Length: 220
Image 1: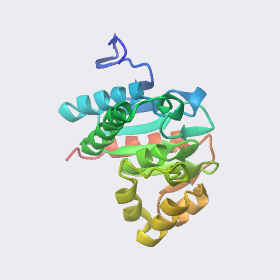
Image 2: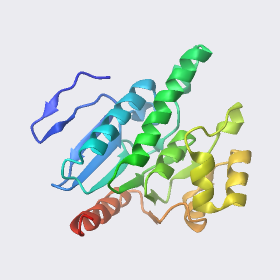
Image 3: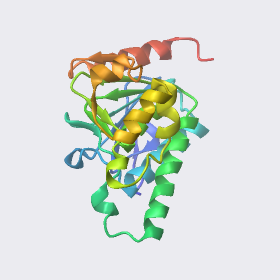
Image 4: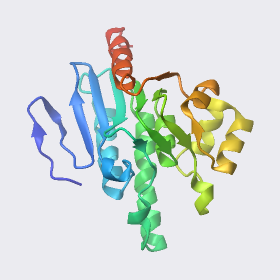
């Protein structure tokens, strides 16, 4: 993980190499996946840094009442695991890496304040699972979604087989998981996966407005 350098404005949240954090107000935190050159794909470091951030917020929300999770760049929210890093790993190394990823997802589920996914681009494989792990999803109308694991001989390993059926129903989830085919933001909305779809330039703004509304409510 990167050397921890504390920002005066966010004294208890470190700066990371693969994610960006910004306090938008006293009660709203924006978290951005920040590897746009590889479609914001997860590598081991990103998994470690996300786990660190979520665990800090589990222990102490630091006054935040809502989080917006998004990504840098315009084409991709998250393309899933970084397969270039994975290539060449031994089975033991891959297993250890996947444990890092799993802990990050489970920590996100345990964050005690609402997390809104602002999906600004494609969300494939672990990227879709990341969005599913949030409390709800706003998406760009240009975004596409898929659980592509079956196409390379693996399975969704970070909650997709549980969280997707809860969102779209068992039969639709089976089709998505078994086919690996991408689908549009409009279909994601029609199927109940996405709460709202917006023009690309509006997604983050709308997610932030909703986060601010949530944060202004009674913090029970």
